[in-house]
Image 1: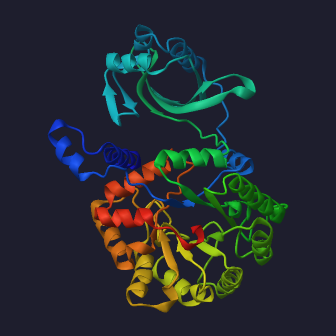
Image 2: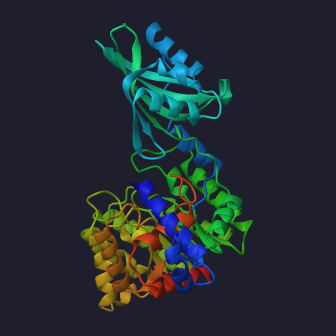
Image 3: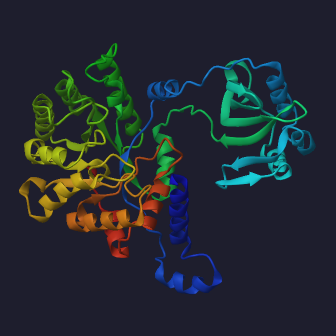
Length: 454
């Protein structure tokens, strides 16, 4: 579903770039409605880079299962399947007459020995190996879980996952009755440096971006100390600042850390003094922040007050867990936000965690703003992933909340430079295609620039 929505958003964005919907009947009228210059955000207010250290950590978190030995009859089936990778008659002998195959590109099933094996024989451009990692068999029913692999030794890389459902037929041979592939396979994260982010921004027509350090990934939770933790946090913030410095007219840097740690104030002061960052990013969920805990609130107040003293903007990801909602937002509004009255405070993901947002929490802020609460004077909200995977009714509610808050407080952000195959351009297309705002409202949001970017 997520990929379908993204595709829809991309199509809608493409029509905005070319001047209207496809089809001869609508071209002339649509061309008159579309602007000559495509609408694109001035700034992506929620972006990240991925350092070599964090890329390695994320890849290690997704360690592939080890290869296993199969019984000879099953191993022979895989060897024959590998050898006949592009040979339809050879593959046909390995599949049942009523076999089914998931076409992961079309999100549909292919049924029947000939259609299945024809599709498989035409799918791949070069040979591959099948690496089994689990199997089971009982009577005439079995399965093999596999990776599709290319390369040898240290250069070997799994590029897909596949589950083969097997049936032993009357001649005693195992055949494949169902095949469910998934591409790409186990994720191997590559570093994303500033030049790659710039290319993604250029593709979207976005001039500038706020780069939010993910040093908080290296700040372990309080109950799981990390060796040399503070040194690793400093190194990640230093790397982010150095990357951003390569494009000073395009990017600004925010530092980050776990606000509950003893070194939090020290690192904030260091980042302001040595790295000249524009702000601070906090991720409450990853840092295991509990605003219902008075000790946590007091530590947050100290960090927010110090950021205010240093005149550093704050981006706060408030969502922590499925129970998060109205109570947490009220605590933030009443006890934490007031100690940073002089700097912009940007609530990430419209007070949710993405995809989507958490409306009971957002309603607290929207109601305070519409009531003229002075504590919200410098409060902003970014749109990162809020339109993803939402129903039509949810999108209507989101549009209503945006209007209640005021479109000039809404900052475009995508949180999409790495991971899940998304891009800043697709996120803007999804937001424009899914949320029922007017052209003028989209234009205002696209042109909004947070004070820390000016």
